[in-house]
View 1 (spheres, rainbow, N blue to C red):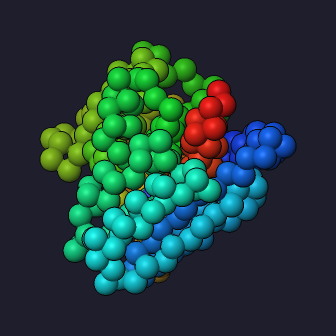
View 2 (view 1 turned 90 degrees about the vertical axis):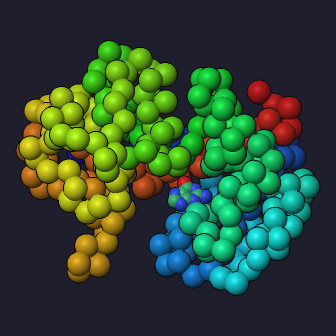
Length: 283
Ligand code: GUN
């Protein structure tokens, strides 16, 4: 078994973004990302801090908007519209989940597609479906980079995704399909899940349940990617995969932390750079 080092791969992505950003700065272009967080979700707070830190690392400006839990949908829409019109802001990221009184789709639909660095806007989702896109959703794009880092060719492989969220499962399946994988999306209502996952050459777990993927669900020699970010009973960060047991069978496996997490942020930096280039007419 070989460990897939998300920290190392993400450092490479960020280094190349930093290099391109330096060239933009020589042309007088300063890249900016607005990060909006509503309420006090502690996990969201950590993610937002990490995103701001990554901006500083690659030389982007970040603008944080930390709004109270009781912010209304109208107030949030007003802020997003202001950021849409702000030329110093190239990318807008509204951290999800939002408090339940705010309709997430209404917010996502307000972000200009050309500033939608999460690629959550229906227009960008449509581009991804067709396979003609500027932005890829950060987590699935990061997973593809990790798979590539192992030297695995997706073409013709059995790929199984566990989870069907709009953020990970669905776009993940699309990206694997674009690379000619034979893709199965599974979810909480799937019957005989282990029968399906144990045939996967590439298994991507995005369930949100600690230790959900057990060794009997993994094919000998599979590439196993763990998108999970869960806290166990002791409050320790852990993935969806029973790592200790599954690493006996996998050829490559991602750890949690240090696997997919850092990649999501690196791909966000890449998307923000792409947004700035597009907005400035640079290819
Ligand atoms: N919440 C969990 N993952 C993400 C993400 O990739 N982007 C945003 N905006 N919110 C998230």
